[in-house]
Length: 330
Image 1 (cartoon, rainbow, N blue to C red):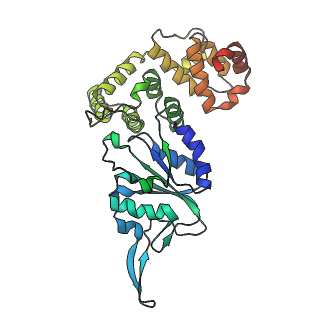
Image 2 (cartoon, rainbow, N blue to C red):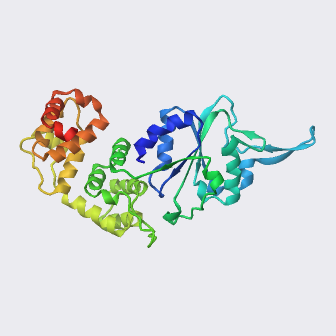
């Protein structure tokens, strides 16, 4: 299930207080989807790493009640206590936790209660974890616990990642490279269990390194240590191929005369640079240049540009292009 579909599905499940378990490999953005849903719904988010807890952390700390001559349990500060509050309790890395912790969590998931603590009625539970085949140390989930969840499988999706990367301000060279080599957005070989490998999360780290503009040797070593040698070599070779491309400003000044590259990688780079800068004011000029590329790249351009700014659909430039290329849009 792609991230955008999960983001659409979660509000309905949360409204019914259906516990959700999101499955996916490490580093693909599961927690980011939960954060975005919490923001969309204006809910508080409590992010709890179950793998770091002991059972007593969930049940609470025992304190004596001398009046009642009983033991009471003081809830941990990461559990919400305000009865009027609304939010998501996100139990991350759940199936990495010891079975004793998972058992304690089961009580909370089953009845929204554990010991003396009760989850406020405005709160819902989402859990997440890696698959056992990811070699990440995940522990098989007991059937009784698994049966309490709606299970969603998180699939890495290039279009969804590109939308996120555009919103997050990742460098256009990274976005262009992933469009050119989508198989390198996520690549993990469980058989070899590499130290560094490309994931959506590690590409965000690469973005920070790339923007810092280190020397060539240092940059390669840093990126290799983030996504692995093969992916690092391909990405940096790609950046060398596109370094002499015209800038967005040069294209806007002279869309008919600005250079159009021959190789597909460079065309991805140009398309990506333009889709993040297109506006209602300049779309006509941008399309003068884009019309010199193939319809495939024009389509890629519009799909990304419209996700960022759907008001472009109201422009005559887009309407004329859409009428001419209806078969591509259907």
